[in-house]
Length: 103
Image 1 (cartoon, one colour):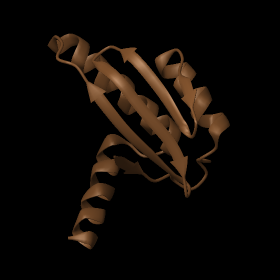
Image 2 (cartoon, helix red, strand yellow):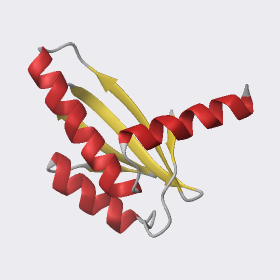
Image 3 (tube, one colour):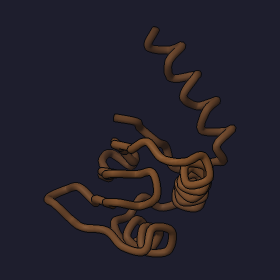
Image 4 (spheres, helix red, strand yellow):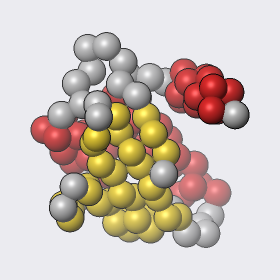
């Protein structure tokens, strides 16, 4: 499961998460603490939850053509950037720092 931080000023609230899921993926389901997006482009299932002011994401993808895969990735990155405030490059740097700390 991947963990994403939120930039200062970007609130980790269920309302914002729901708004962004609706905007970028066109809908979602709620199952307990999890927000689930199913069958979106190359995404078979995307499970998200908010906990301790962090976003946790787990995804199952399916094999698809390159165009669909690229569009899915771009949508996912836009969603994360708008929700957390961090670009894909910034998220990658943060993950590297976390890995160095724990490694």
